[in-house]
Image (tube, rainbow, N blue to C red):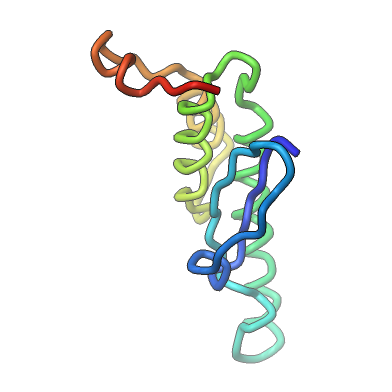
Length: 119
């Protein structure tokens, strides 16, 4: 297993099980649409919003140059993706986010040395 992504708001504070290997994990908080209150339309909207947020995040995730990113940078990108909101996302905005997520972060030699860790 390479990646573990949790999405339920309730899972954020819980201890995750031990996964085989050393997967990169991130929490992409989403409100549970099954817990939505209101009429039929409100509940449908909650599911659509959860779907849209997850779809946006996954589109950005699968666009990352995973083979070119070191584990620290990949972890950082997954955390950033998890903080995105799908509300009002246009195709241009999504494209800009994908390009931004794919760019390497420039670190000074000192910070690069401090950020490296054995794999």
